[in-house]
Structure formats: structure tokens, C-alpha cells
Image 1 (tube, helix red, strand yellow):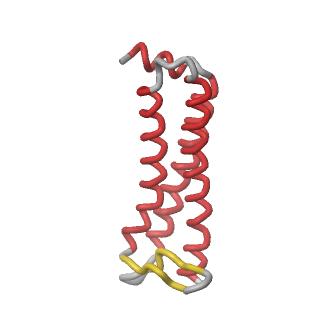
Image 2 (cartoon, one colour):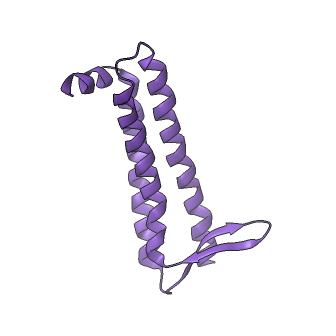
Length: 121
């Protein structure tokens, strides 16, 4: 296990992806917490569709599903690298896997802004 860990972290871009992914995910948790602290009602709008309007209403605690999904994507794709650590194309697989996790976290952070605007304006 330690060999696989050192094999994965030997690649410089893995450290960079994980650092950026960790920062984006930590900001998701922080802004979700700020969002949760400002909620005064029992229900909030969790999803809004331009065509149909409000699609999903739920308790304020469910706002933490957004950063939880981002954390899951980051951790799952990182541990997926352990499965592919012995392959010769680990460099390409690590780029694809961790870039996908970073994009998931980035798009989740983009979804938090409109939710804030919809609920508090």
C-alpha cells in the first residue's frame, strides 16, 4: 500500500490537482456553512430550473449535500488511482481522474451562488 501511495504521489501533477481540489472543496464547505447560518426558515430552495421554476425544496441541512458530493468525487477518483497504479498509463489516467474531480468541485461551487441568490433575494 505504501508503495502504491508513493508511486502516485511521485507524480507532481497529482499533488497539484489534490491541492486545488482540496481548496475548492474546502471553500464549498465554508460557503455552505455560511449559507446554512443565514437561513431562518425551515425550508429552502435546493434546485431551480429556468424552464419550470423551483424543482426541489428541502431542509437547510441538505445544502451540505453539495460539498459532500464534491468530497466524494475527489476521494473516489483519488482512490481509483490505486486501482490503476500498476498500469503504464498512470500519468494519463491520473490527469483524467483528478481533472474530472476538480471540474466536479468547480461546477458544484458554481451552483452554490445561484442557490444563495434565489433563497435570499
